Structures are given as C-alpha cells and as structure tokens.
Length: 189
Image (cartoon, rainbow, N blue to C red):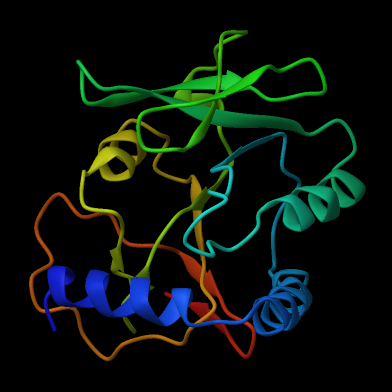
C-alpha cells in the first residue's frame, strides 16, 4: 500500500477505537516500551499527543523514562511553517503550551535545544512496516528533523497497530525507525 492509502486507513482505524479500547492498548504498549534495551537517556525528544485522532499518549512513556533516567530533559517541537522545520524546546512544568494551526500543542517560547544533543526521539506515526519505515502525517517535518540529529539517535515509534508488510512508496529522504512499540509486540529494525 502507498503512504496515502495507509494514512487514510489508519486514521479510520484509530478513530474507530473506543475509549476503553485505546486505554487498554495504551497500558499494553507501555508494558512493551518498558522492555526496550535503552541506554541512559539525557535528552528525550517527544511529540505531545493531539487531543483528536486518538494518537498514542506519550505522557506515560515520559513518566517511565523520568523514573529510569533521573535528570532527563524532555524536549518538544515547535513547527516553523515558513521554514518547514521544527525547533526543539525544553518541556518542563514552566512551559506554556499553545495550539498551532493543526491543533498540535507546542511551546509558546522557552529554551531551545540543539538536535545533536538528543539521545532518543519518540516519532509520531500513523502506520509502519516490517523494515521500520513509517507513515507520518505527510508533511515531512520529522524526516527533516531526524536528518539533523546524531547518527546514533534512537528513533522509536509508538503504534496501537501491528506492522504492515511493506510501504510501497518510501523514498530516499525517509528515515526508518530503530524500534516500534505496539501493545502486542516490540519491533526492532
């Protein structure tokens, strides 16, 4: 299937989940995330889940990583739509969040962080395949951002659904995941 076909299919699949189904899947996903063989993480870049579209909630993962990585710094993106890029901001209890034009919560302002400092990225996705290729929301922001990170940055996807066999239209600028965590399986690529 193509990215466009998968994007449509998985938006529908997520929207069909009931609240109790997504809560159960979220709990099972966290159990599998806790099995990831991660080194000590100093800087975690994470997306903040949208309140629409039943995106995987990253807050439980952040709390787990705070417990296992004392002193961890959380970093969240703010999109620069003119430059088609993302700027990393420290995310803490003082961060003021506002919705951007796509209803994504972003920091209003704050302390920026160089992409080269980031150890782990929780990458948003709608679907992924057995080779670690992912289908995002179609704007390419995360592929451009990941291209500016260190070569050893760990890229982890979170999905309520299992891998597709193959995404037919991946390109040279698509950056694959190292892992994808689902409620029933931990994929390593």
